[in-house]
Every structure is written in C-alpha cells, then in structure tokens.
Image 1: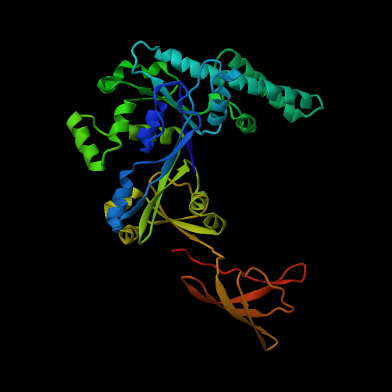
Image 2: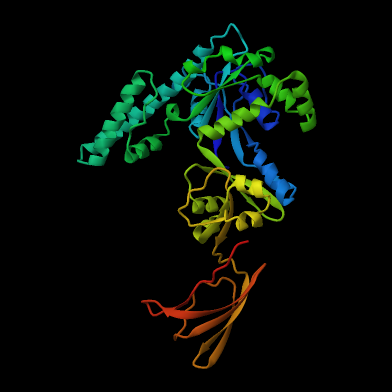
Length: 420
C-alpha cells in the first residue's frame, strides 16, 4: 500500500467512528476506554471528478481511484511514553504512519479540547526525547573515536534535545540534507505531518467557526463522525438526497481525505486504455520515469519516453488525437517533472518475451535455437543474427549485429518493444 494515515487521539474521541465513516466498515466503536486494541486498516478512495470526466470522454466504465490507507490506532493517555494504558503499543503503531490524523473530542462541552490536544502532543514529544537521548549517547561514543560525521550528528541531536526538553517539536526547517537523513532515521513522532479533526455534535457541524484554527499548529477539519458514519451506510443516491434535505453540502469525509493528500504533498496523474482509466498517486516533484515505476518497475527500468498531455487540454479538445493535432501532446524524457492532473502514456523497453526462434549466419552455417528468456549467448565468431520473435501480443522481425565483450563473449543486442 502507498501512504498510511494514522487516526490518533485520546480514548473515546471518536476515532473508530471516523474510521468507520471513512472506510464504510464496522470496526468496534463502543464508548469505553481502549475499545480499539489492535489497529484497524482500511483503504479510502480519493474522490476526483477528473477521473469521471476522462472515463466519459474515452467511453469506459471501469474507473480506478487513487487511494490512501487509514489506520485506526488505540487511544493515547497521559503517561503513554512510560507505558501507561496501551502507550507502548500506540507509539509503535503511530511510528509506522506517514501522517497523523488527530481526532479531538469536541462534542462534549465540558471537555477541554486543548488539554486533549496537549496530552497527545506532549506524549509524542516525551517519546521522541527518549529516542534522541539514546541516539545522542551512541553518537557521542563514536565521535570520541574521531568520526567527524558522528560528531556532527551529536551536535544536531543535542540541538533537537534542547527543543524537546522545552516541550516543543523540533524545528527542522534549516537543516541540511545530511542532517535530514539523520533525523529521518529516528522516525520522530512529533515531526510527523498531521492535521486535526474536531469531532462535534450533529447540531454544531455548521458552527465550525467557533474553533480558532489559528491557535493550532496544524490544519483543522470539523466533522460529526457519528452522523457521517450513519450516512456512509446509505447508497450514493440516498446519501445525496439526505445531504440535500439536511443542507449538509458535500461530505466532510472528502475534506479529510483531500487534506491528508495535500499535507503529504501528493499529486495525481492518469493513465487510460480501451478498458479502464486509472488515477495514480505520487509525491510532487517526481519525474516521469519515477511515475512510470509506480505503474510497473519494468517501465522505469526500460523507460524510453512518455507521451504527456494536461487534463485541461484533454477536457477542452475531448480527444487524444485532437490534442496531438493541436501540438499539445508532449514527448518527455525521464527527467521531466509531472504536474498534477497530467495524463501519461509510457513507452519502454520490455524483455518479457515468452517464446521465440532465431537463426544465425556464421560462415554460411545456420543454427536454430528455441529459448524462453533471451538475454545473452556465447557465440564463437562474430556475424549477424536474424530474429523472429513471437510474444503474447506482438511480433517482430529484427536483425542485430553481434558484439564481443572484453571477455571474448559475443552478445546479442536487446530488442526494443513499444508499450501501448
């Protein structure tokens, strides 16, 4: 699976209810401490109207959305860093997450929401402090041997420790790439990207403005998890009618998914063929060969070029050939960076040849072979080779020169296949 979003918070904040609403599942969500012990896992499609538009233009019914994985983690209580409650288990699970979705109990007016936020944040900082102290001790021992790299690591960890001791998350905005690698190896919990979800009563959904997001250190989404969980059990048509009658507008669940998508720095590109259109998720700034590897590793290894057009151009002209005729279909090399919404077709070399025969002309002598995976042969003399290839969906007749390497072994050049 790709990117994992951990749903965290104090016990009974509504984490499992939100998880059920997001994933349309039925994880236990009773109102007692530590209802969730083992984490629940669910995959959520990222709603994207562009996928529907592309499918309508090319006339296919099968649409495959980009997805995020959500994990419902046990509640965290004060003292979790010392093992209170299910603290150790909680911290181990959340360390594996790419993003923290911090659910806050805002449906109880008697509850101090900012105290709940502080409880979780402080426990993450205390756990990080323990991690950094141990790493600093190891770095110091190695620095005494004259290892300058470890000395630099010790100085970095010393600065981070000072910030954590003040109850602050480390400021990593000005660290170098080498320092970033050190910090990443520690998997610090307080440095993970996050956002808050305030779980309110049904009658307070439209009163989100009463919560000041400016007082928080991360973005805020307001939702009634119980109501959304109930609505999620309806059919799509019933959901639309219910929201229209209640004046609820679009699903707040999509806001949560889109917020997570944005904070993780993700973007979407599309591919399509005669039977389906598909959305793929990659981090912003990735190039086309890395995006091709997301589809299949063979595409990245044998990448030749990518044919790229923007979603806006495809929607405007309504046809791939029309985009090409307008000069807007681009041929890009492997270093080109994809933009959000780009539609891509990959051309690459593939060696997945299932059966073939060939004959070799060597001193007027013809030899015939039948092999399953053509990669290299030892041939006594130079010459040329005529190859007739039969694969699952294509054939090729090619002629290759034979090249001798420094070890005296003659090799046959690889055959290029165009992926459609």
